[in-house]
Structures are given as structure tokens and as C-alpha cells.
Image 1 (cartoon, rainbow, N blue to C red):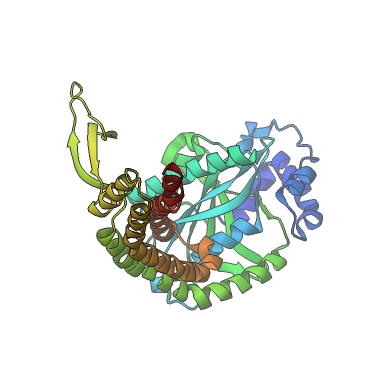
Image 2: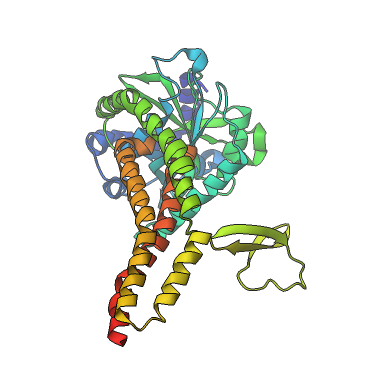
Amino acid sequence: MTGKELEKKERKISNTDKIFRRISSIEDNIFDKSTNVENIYEKISTIKEPSITRYELDIPTFAPVYLTYKAYKRMIGYAIRYANDHLESRKWKEVYGVLIGALRENSFVIVKDAIPVCVGGRSGVELEPIHYADLSEIDASVFERAIEDGNTDFIVGWWHTHPGFGFFFSGTDRITQLGYQGPNPFAVGLIFDHCQKQAGSLGVAALRLKNPERGTLSKHIIVNLSYDMGTKTMNQKINKVIEKIQKNMDKVLKELNYIRNVLDKKLLTNLEKKYGLLLLLEKDMAVMENEDVGEGGEYVWGFGFRKATYRKPRFRRRIEIEIEKSKEIFVEKKIVNSQQKIKNMLLKPNKLYYRIIENFIKRIDVINPYYDYLDADERKIIENFGRRLNNYYEILDHFNNEVASMSQQDVNNV
């Protein structure tokens, strides 16, 4: 929809236009400097909406959206990696993400965060099955954090980029928007086009479907979008961020590849192979309803029940056998010898583990300032490696503590 068409439609919708004008009239006072979300709500909540009777308007469809600098920065920081003025237009790619925020008094939406999910091609983003799993994890994480923090944050919509295409919903976009706006009439879709980003514009627009009940035949509308600081200030700040991202992102991606290909696939894998402590999956077999699962197995949901059986690595069994033997020794000298033997067995895995962890910390120090601009696949590299490393450490630390406490306890029993 062009600007002229939008102006014509807003003139027809007089009452809604009044709301937007009244909100805009105080924007300079509210958004000329960085303001926290609660202060925005406190000021906006004083505005009373006139009764709307003309055309029987659906308020959620036209509800204004307030975009925080934090969300805008994260959205643009990821988008600019794949479409910018320094990159040939034929190499531009669209990106996709989700919006986290809150609904206030059923009157406006606050977007507090914009989480990058994945990158697509020149004219669209196609989600893989793994990305739907990522979205489910994000949803669960937002819900858990909302409970912990006592807020009402949830996924309020989605965002994607139209590099050089402008602000509209394609057929695929309408399907995606229906998925959000169907269960939540206030759900919004933000579109960023870096070609539209100029001195007086942030290059972003907020869209909804006008008649979602019509499905893919519904037309889109552009709704009122405001920010928690002035456009000029946001542009100045974001330009500095963009400059840093373009300067350092290659280094960040290099460190990510090092974590995946060297620390994870080589060093940690070799550590687990030579000095294995984590349980190993031995078999995964189907279990009939009348079959006994047995000890050590656990059910995994799939096409019916499945039984996963694990075994302890040889190195871990050796350590546990030595610890059990030491508990049966009642001669002080033999206790010390047994303790020293276990210490020697744990010496190399401890050295290798701490060498890996020191290496990992160095990489994270480089990545951390730009972590917000990584997508789900890139974040998984760090999360999965960190999880594996932590699982190994928990068992290693348990054995270290066993050895440390073993001698004194056994000597007291002599």
C-alpha cells in the first residue's frame, strides 16, 4: 500500500485517525530521549480512545505498535549482515525472526526484543523443520522467563526483511501473518528494508492483515509505529552499531567455526573418546505395550514407545571400580596409594578439560558483544557445545571431590 493510499484510507476512518493524531501529538515529549517501557505505558495510558462506531472498526487490527531501541538494534544488526549498501544486490538475502513484547490494556503492543531465527534467499525465507523446533524453544523460554520475572511478555509477532522490495505482505507473508494474527488479533509483522532507511526514516514498518477471516485473500494495512527515542537519535546510534558489526562479524563467524570444528568435533570428542565419562547410547529399540522396559531404560516419545539403553564408558567404569576398592581398604598407607592412583587417572582429563575451557572462553570473549546478532543455528553452536562441556565437567568434578574427601574419611575410620 502506498503512502497516498494509506492517507486516503485514514481520512475515511476518522475516529481511528483521531487516536493516531492524539498519540503523535505527544510523541516528541515521550520519544525524544531513551525512555523505559513502563514510562511509555504510563504516559500513553492517559490517552482516552473515543468511541468508535463508524465502519464497526476492529480495534486490534489498528492498534499502534511501539518498538524499543533494543528490539530495533537486534533486528537491524542481524538483517544488515545479509543486505547492505556494500553488498551487491544480487547477493542480498531475506532474514526472519520473532518479536517478544507485551500487550497493554488491549490498546497497543510494545515490542521489547526481536530474536533472529534464520536467513533465507533473495526473495524469501523457507523454514526448515529444525527452525520450528527453535521457535518452540524460544516460546517456552519466553514463557519461563515471564513467570520468573513476573511480567506478561510473550511472542507478539514476527519480523523479516524486504531488501529493496519495500513494505507489503507477499502471499507467503500473509500465510505467516495468519499463523500469528489468527490466535492473537494484535499480532504484528515488522518489515525492514535497508533501502528505505534514511536520515528521517528507520526503514521499518508495522503491518497486519485487515480481514484475517478472509485468509490469504485478506489485504494488509500499515499501522502506526512509534519508538522509545527520536528517529534521528536512533539512526545515529544504530549507524555506529552497524559499523562495528560490519567490521567485526567475520571474526565472530571465524570463532564460531573454531568452536564447532576444533573445540567440539576434535578436542572435546577426543577427550570423551579417551577419557569418557558421559553415558553412551547403546541401543534404541521399539517397546511393545506389554513389554517390560527394564532398569536403566527410559521411554522416548515417537511412533509408539521406545526404549533407550545406555552404558558407562570404560574409563568411567575404571574410576568407579577404583573408588569402590579404596572404600574397602583399612590400612592408611594403602589408602594413600589408592587415592594417588585415582588422582593420576584423573590428571590428564582434568588438564585437557581446562585447556578446552580456557580456549572456549577466549572465543566467547570475541563473540559475546555480537551474540544478539546471531541466528538460531549460530547460537546452537555455542549452546550445544557449552551443554556437552558442562555435562562432562559435572561428572569429572564429582570424581575430583570423591578423591579429595576419600582419604580423610577413610583414615578417620581406621
